[in-house]
Image 1: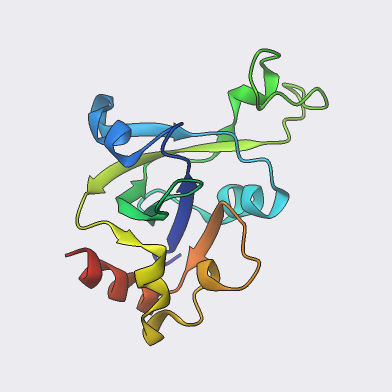
Image 2: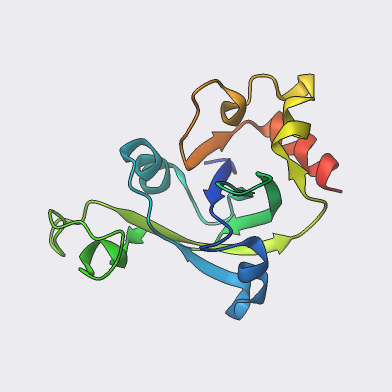
Length: 154
């Protein structure tokens, strides 16, 4: 399959792009996704080498904080099995996991592009992130949108 592109939202108080840059091998596990559509994107769509817009959400100034890439195959999210985790799911079992994680690696930290700026570009008017009511934490990005945003980031 050809390379695909994704936007993945993270709350910077939990995992910021700076945290990923500082992590061993600049890599982190993407965990805690508890929406079936977002899970399906991870499980069925993502492949090693796919590009990721690392997006800071639920913060004072939401926006794209950096570029990352997928560096693992999808695997069961361990937090679903941990009763002490806020992401615990009592219906999930080792034999039948419900939630999926994947590893991402920080590639580049350019200029922070906030949501207000993204909305100002007609080239991005059809981007899923900017659609009214869009709340998914993982979503596909069209190749033209990806290229345009890379130019914005610098």
